[in-house]
Structures are given as C-alpha cells and as structure tokens.
Length: 276
Ligand code: KIV
Image 1 (tube, rainbow, N blue to C red):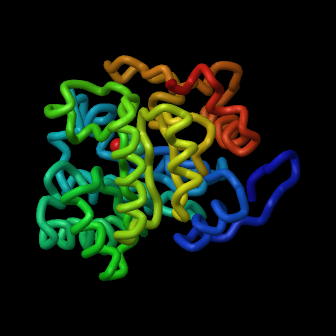
Image 2: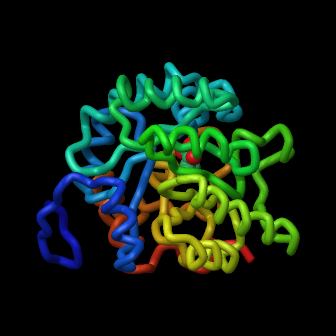
C-alpha cells in the first residue's frame, strides 16, 4: 500500500505492459536508482514504479570518476541485492560500458542481469549501431530501456556531461533516434539532459514511455539518482535538474515519498530544473 493523494491504494507488482498503460492513461511513472536491499525496500514502500540499478553506482557507490569502470559483475551483484528488497517495483539493470558492443555480448550480459540479477529489463545507451542489440534482445523477449540525450558512457567522445540536442540538427537527430529505438523494440526510453521542449516532442511522438532526468516535465515519468535527491555529497557536482528532497523531510522515507508525490502531481520537475 502507498499513499496517493491521501488515500491508500492497493499495489500489485509492476510489469512492462503496465508501464506502457500508464503512459496511455497519462499517469506519471516514478523511478529512482538504488544499489542495495535496504534502500530498495525503502523506495519500494514509498511507491516508486521502477528501480534502476544504474551504472551511476560507479560514481556514487564506488567513488569512480565516471561510469566506465563498472562491470557486468558489479551490476549483477547490486541488482541481486536490490531484487531482494523489492515487492512491487519493476527492476531495471544497466548494461555497463561495452557490455553490449556485439549482439552476443549484449545477450550474455542481459541474460546475467535477468537470471542472476533478478532484473526484468535492461538499459543501454545510444541509437544508430545500438539498434542492432536493441532489436536482438527484444526479439528474444528481453525488455529493453533505451537511453538518449546525454549518454554518460560516451563521456570521452562528448568531452563532458553537457546538455544534448540544443542545435536544430542535433534535436532532429534525437527525435529520429527516439523513433528508431521504439521501432527496434525498446519498451521504454530514458531522456537525459535534453531541452524540455524537445523531450515533450519526443514523448508525444512515440508510444513507449519516456523517463526524464533533466528533460523537463513533459516526459511520461521521471528518474533521479538516489544519492542526488537525498542531498548526499558523492564528490560530484550536483546537476541543476536535481532537487534535494531531504529539504523539509523528517526521514529518508519521507523524502522519497515527497519525490513520488511531486512527480505524480506534476510539481517536480519545475522550470528551474529544466533546460531550454
Ligand atoms: O546510471 C544511472 O543511474 C542512469 C540514470 C541517471 C538514468 O543511467
């Protein structure tokens, strides 16, 4: 049970079709990252719809400078921990850097995420050549979440963690990429650090749910890194799209509940959390 606008609501386990139905119904999807069983239990009880074991764990758990050193074994280990804490939320596991560079590697990495890590979906970054692994996995009944905009595994090529899709050509390419990943069989799409208007355009254009992080209020749902929204200093600059939900909260559970409520009532993200 979780509190939704003051009324207790019975919850059953989240599924991939239910996430798609939420988009169709115009109900906001709430998501957060977690890396261990205790936090998984807490965010699950707070009513989040899906939990991502992100390769952000490289930065917020391992203290790395980027997500690149994270291994398949790391994500499998943390996913298995998180899976033990979840009752309702769907578990999504990140495919680490180069672990889906070929379709064979993508299949082996994803099978480990589902079979050993307890995940129900895997996430991978990019379109273009990544359409092949997306298609390959989805044809083998492995649900895939694509990730476009700022793709942190491309940090060496991008030269940093800046906003993507601001120029007209880049915006057009991102829109085309979103259509392509959906057509290739992706079940969901994370949009990271893209102008709010562009994210809203993508959301209207494709049938699969879009989950924004620094992509404005026009997405079908929102995700934040747990440590960021709890105001924990993980040694990295806090991006402008983050709100510290511990401000005004009396407990961590209260902060996560406030985040879920703010996403559902549309008060988060505000204009100050988005990009033009
Ligand atoms: O690794 C991660 O936590 C992510 C989210 C920021 C979407 O990819």
